[in-house]
Length: 322
Length: 193
Image (cartoon, rainbow over all chains, first blue to last red; front, side, top):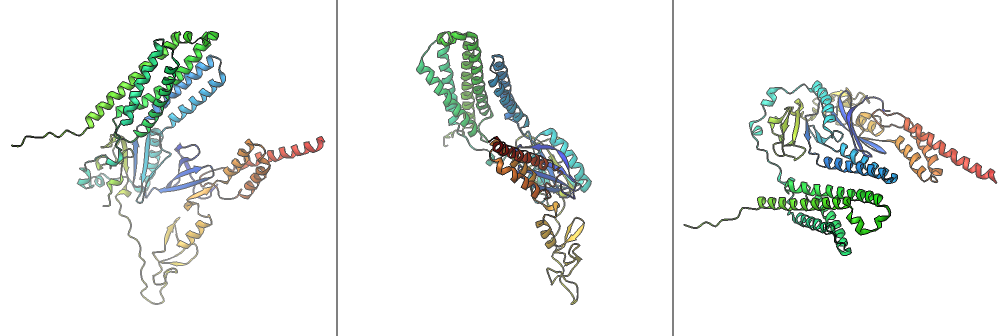
């Protein structure tokens, strides 16, 4: 234990192996970055703090994380019901980790500005915790510095007030959307191939083609999701890509659960392929698969077409010279 | 007034936050519409203090700075007693220190208030006691090593935030168990013959 400055812990913590926390003493806030073998410190004295900026961030991935977690929970329950305890436990563990990561994901960012730096406080990543902690810090800063008077705020130059704020252009990358066109088209094809087995067509090459196409679609979906980050692509298009990824995972898991359920129900008869395909649960699942892939693919193609039409440069109309 | 509004930026899109949104309960970024809160404090409007240059000596026999013989001494160092000019005087912990005393105390680890980092020897000892135990046989080497680390660094400066010696105690207990198990195994193999 160190002698001297007594510290007490402020709410908020982030990270697992490399964690961040905030501590407060009589005259400063201490930001601690801890890895398994050492700690590093940054001190922010109350008299030096100029501003605190707290921004709410869109927590895009959390809903997908919760959905995936819920699907894993459902799968674990189904596996447990069908007497597969090992797989059920594995799925349960994955569900727990997924839900925990979704719950821990950041929904705000907090920056603390002094004369010489503007530093992020990584331990304040949830709005509720950040609100509590900043209230404590603010009270201490105001005790050390006093509150800002209305006159001081009024005295801010008028040109600063009237400043027209524009988003920094360099923040967004340009994305042509070529990869997205290919992905959405392949998704529609994948849906169409699913319809063949729904119609009762049993063909090994067709099944192989559907499987290969499914793998390519998954790969391209992941690439498209990476490519569209921080790009100027329309929000709708990006959402369709994320939704397709979630649907793909959900479809895979649901297929797994349905197969186990049907195999459990049919017993020895499950070896008969035509009987397996005629099962209502399998047919219903394939119908959902067909509708999901086709709907997402077509929606993606439509949104992409709309985005590219709206962002195309205006055509140059040649006027008639007088 | 040293206002630099471009430094107050939205964390989401990096656009500057206009003055109208400062110290408001509910504000939105004008560029990305992200909800934000900007709290400004009086230090934001304060002018940075002018750097001290030190006063030159006017008369012979006047006390001069230990580090700058041509500058007039204004205060002695409360730690070593050397005379300091206003350039060398550092106010620290309510006292006047010279840069040399601050540097030497920091190097010796005597000033927790200035430490930028600390090693966590208790965590190292605990890892050394736990991780090799997964493979069992490395503990013949790592268990004594754990005991060495615990004894060697028991009194070393640890974290500057409150932290108990519990990790050291657990590491010692685990290392003792591992050593005991090895001794038992050796005795068992000897006396079984």
